[in-house]
Amino acid sequence: METPYLHEDIPGGVPLKMWTRGVPVEDEARRQLANAARLPIVFKHIAAMPDVHVGIGATVGSVIPTLKAVIPAAVGVDIGCGMIACKTTLTAEDLPDNLGPLRAAIERAVPHGRQPGSRDPGAWQKPPGAVNTAWSQLEPAFTSLCRDYPKLEKTNHLQHLGTLGTGNHFIEVCLDETGFVWFMLHSGSRGVGNFIGTMFIELAKQDAMRHQANLPDRDLAYFEEGSRYFGDYVRAVGWAQRFAAINREVMMTRVIEAAQTVIRKKFQSHVEAVNCHHNYVNQERHFGQDVYVTRKGAVSAKAGQLGIIPGSMGARSYIVRGKGNPESFDSCSHGAGRVMSRGEAKRRFTLADHRAATEGVECRKDKDVIDETPAAYKDIDAVMAAQSDLVDVVHTLKQVVCVKG
Image 1 (tube, rainbow, N blue to C red):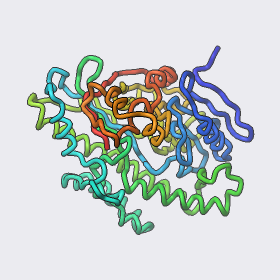
Image 2: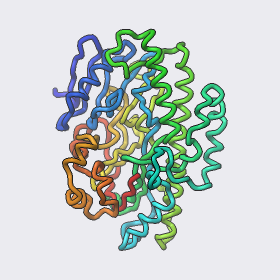
Image 3: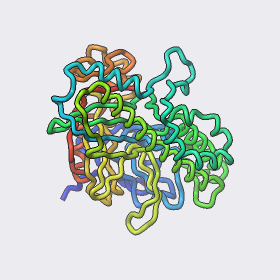
Image 4: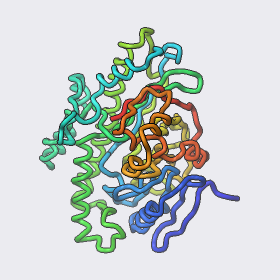
């Protein structure tokens, strides 16, 4: 009987199990996966999700279980990046005919993108003052981290709390299959998470030069339990993941408040709600062994657990329920996955192409978002078909408003 995944033995390493039937996989992504599979710390096998594509250091769309060790570059620098979505009591008929004011209200409420004319990638618009309560949940552990790593104090940790960022981060207003309105957004730990990730990736590389001479890829340098930085990294990455989850909650509150200023009908939010990471590391038990599971561009899909798999601008997104497939280490994809680089998308597609692909969606339709146009991503329907043994679809969402960072 044919398995739902492709099995590939890696000489000198653990096997790859790839949920990629019917979706393209770059040769470079396969090479990255094989390099990770040859690490002596990897447990049992590596699971590749259908949205798998080349990443920096480790492959996006990979699930890497490790024994008594963690790989900072496999988590990456967008630590805790993920999704939040909530269903409301609103229906399509309750939305205004002109969605422009709703989009504008959300854009005013949630800082996003870079400030015009700024050369400083950290100089985003300032968040609203209401972040103080949220920061109080994060401050004690952050202060403790700063005692060991004082440069953390100089990051935009407080400035970025409650802000969306740039690139593929987004806020959407969606309709589900029965016409109910959902709010959904995608963001992570922002500048402070980037700083933590970058700092520990470099420290891991320095350690590797002394202790890991046979690394297949220097970007896959790791910390083992008991090493100098292992405990600090686990503590810091855990804090950044918490920052990311709280950051999404703060923004979702602002999105709902903004919608209430435009939509005249009173409504309830969070009828159903999901807040999940898709760039993170977590200690879990699989196949009778306690391991660190790094999901880089993958979502936890334990039996009964809800998750979010977004499509690209103009495509469908999905609220899913995990099936708890042990072979994937209880995981599923985190989206459609890029099929080409941002540069290639800008070269290949025109504004007319982008406008046609996002017809019916209230969103930006200028040259600065062509790299996020739907055709730059894999077919979300093919991605979902390839992982039918990992999740069940609970809701199918179609966006009507999209705010890009």
